[in-house]
Length: 132
Image (cartoon, rainbow, N blue to C red):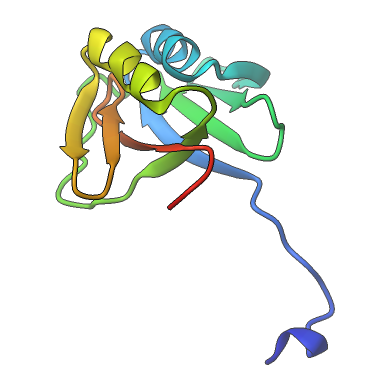
């Protein structure tokens, strides 16, 4: 079906990462990217907490899911999924900031990009605001 015949539109809303230590993850995303909590849902029985993080543009949310009964690191396997962010300012200074946080897990100098790893091992690609 082509887009002219589709009776609706869609937009990206959020992406989810399951996390082992919610407070540690919230601290990481605030320090590394300035993401802030937008909303939170706590299960009545305490079995899960969902925290939605927003960026300054407000176009997309990252959902962090904490599950009470999950007490071991998540097995991320060989799935090369990742979140990508674009950053303003001096890209080299941003990279130096993340290097000081000791969270850079992969750099591709030929492509001019790098990835950071969050406390649960999820990768986040960091790109400059313009380019690529």
